[in-house]
Image (tube, rainbow, N blue to C red):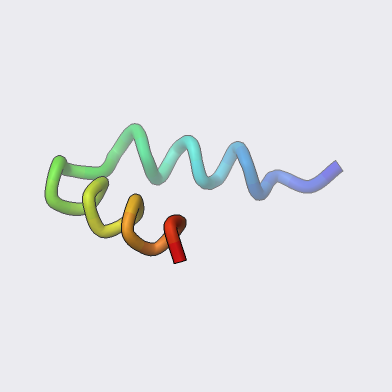
Length: 29
């Protein structure tokens, strides 16, 4: 089991709205 998802969730929870928008665009690629 990897902690990739856990790490991502932690990043997401700590992200600002601007950072979350960047993450959405990054995922959408």
